[in-house]
Image 1 (cartoon, one colour):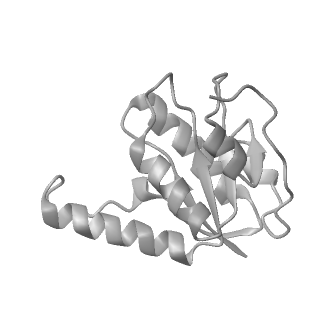
Image 2 (cartoon, helix red, strand yellow; image 1 turned 180 degrees about the vertical axis):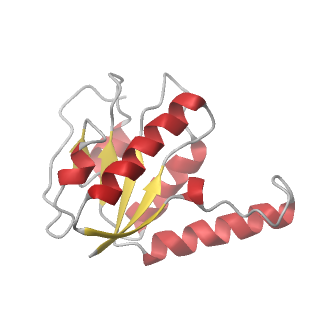
Length: 146
């Protein structure tokens, strides 16, 4: 069973809806063991925004990426509104030699760093339910990049 780290922003209703679809699809995949979604694992005993909260959150997320077999990243950024936390998680995962499965549902141009760094490219959250996380088949992005 594959352990998945789910990277993606959850600051707006649209982003929360998108990450919830991904969480649901991953939960339905019989090849997925554990899914760590930072959205569902916020540190609640510390005040958000404090230095202590930031340190604990950072350390927890990095530790979870280290323990994951694969990172699934939601990259539906609008124009230049890239979520820096998600970008960091993707870069850290790439450097850690973790396969990155990119979910890109919107019709937007993908940054070349993401396009070149991904292992598999998916267009619909529902595809995560059927993706074979045990063999990790490769697929690539074939669109315009910036």
